Length: 313
Image (cartoon, rainbow, N blue to C red):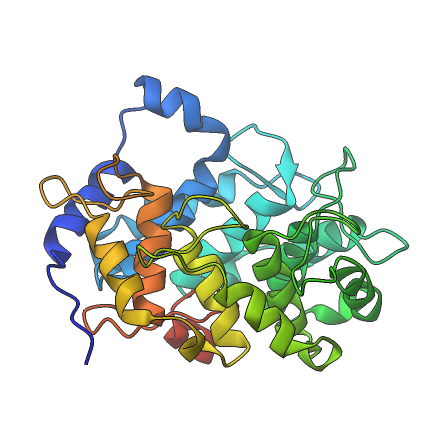
């Protein structure tokens, strides 16, 4: 059995609660103000994986999230920010964590998400028109959580994702773009959620993902790049969805993630010896959850939420 030690649960919880209560007058808050809802999702999901969600100020957080909804139905990254698809997904995921999806104006959200789909099946990230395979995943996941996939052309979305598939088995952000682990996750996640994984050569894609593991045990985003803890989620979850987790050395990956912890202040960094942050803390914990860490709740590889929540919604 793999060893998940040292793994200071209480210290990581303390780090996350401190990050959640960041001084609104601080420089750090100013720099991240435009993506606070995504930050809330990373923080709250991490806390929930660590069995500490009941310690958060649920009503205040839910009230703030609801205040970020635009009249269009989408959510901005903070109050008075323009709505976008990624922030809308994060808002829905946060409400799902608290089992309070019923408090959302779901029809307006569904209408907003559907309005961003283009004729080729792809989705824009917002009204300004950028197209990326991650937006298709965000749209499909958001509607899957709300159980409203009927509101969009799923078949066209799948065709767009398949058009992003490259000869090496990886996926890019748009057709013809370089294969990247983050995009592979988004595309595999979309195909998983739409029961379309049979449309690709899973052996070839699994090979591309397995090749991301380096000698230090970590995973990278593309060939000849440095390992990064965030890919402990992007790559690992994709392998889980393809039922190929045993294609990498899990023990070495666990060691890499644990070496990236800050054992004095809590949190997980992108790489051993670097400074921890909420983003990498979430992806490190999510990766450890997929690898069977007994101190963590199990996370769903496609929904990126605790499995227990998906089974209840």
